Amino acid sequence: MAELTSPVAGKIQEINIKVGQMITEDDEAFIIEAMKMENVVYGEAGIVKEILINVGDKVEEDAVLAVVQ
Image 1 (cartoon, rainbow, N blue to C red):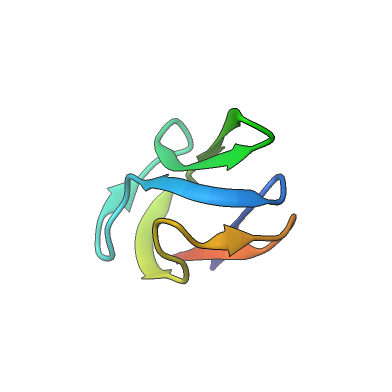
Image 2: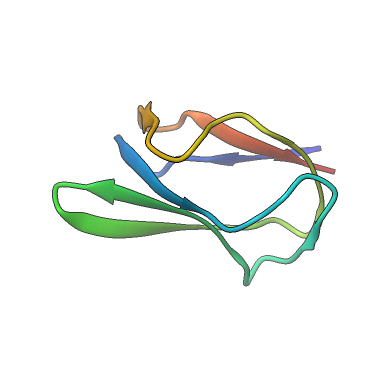
């Protein structure tokens, strides 16, 4: 299993994946706003098992956002 983590502390702007969805390394899984800039979190190859955050949540750097198998 792989974890998608936040590269920066910020606010979740978009969640572009769903539980059960097959994703790849090129998929934009999350968009996080930090200091008025958007940061993209890309996927890992596999099936999304769990999403641990919601749009509008504030996250810390290295926070686990989703689990992919």
